[in-house]
Length: 146
Image 1 (cartoon, rainbow, N blue to C red):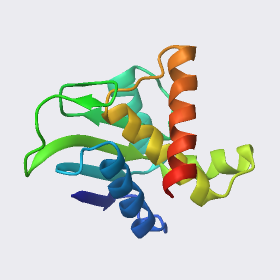
Image 2 (image 1 turned 90 degrees about the vertical axis):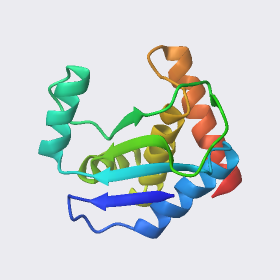
Image 3 (image 1 turned 180 degrees about the vertical axis):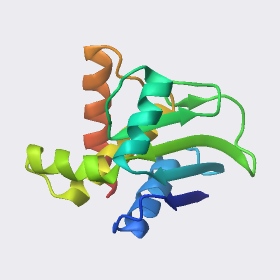
Image 4 (image 1 turned 60 degrees about the horizontal axis):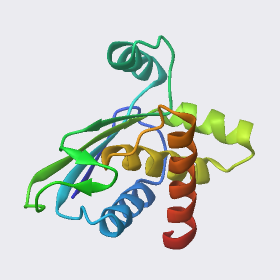
């Protein structure tokens, strides 16, 4: 189940977010788990980034995993109501990034959403190798599934 909270009241395709997250859950075999997706303002994202990562700037996505997992292999069987985690996104930042990368806001939103979901299933981008792996996985998922 995907719950979306649009706290920033930004006009975006919530159906796209939900369907992409559900497809990801199916492919990564976490369909029985609940996911919360929140869209917040740049100011709120900056506060959260400072609080949880020690970085006094906005970011596109923060991922808060709620299960013990490693590299896409979640422990245990998914039961009804199990929580996968929460993604917090700054849609204004995503739109700015889209413009700088020459993507549409829709394309960037999907890429950032998938990137956050990869974090929730155990991938990280703390190293250059990890970052490149996540980019590759994200691009492959989007190309093959959306």
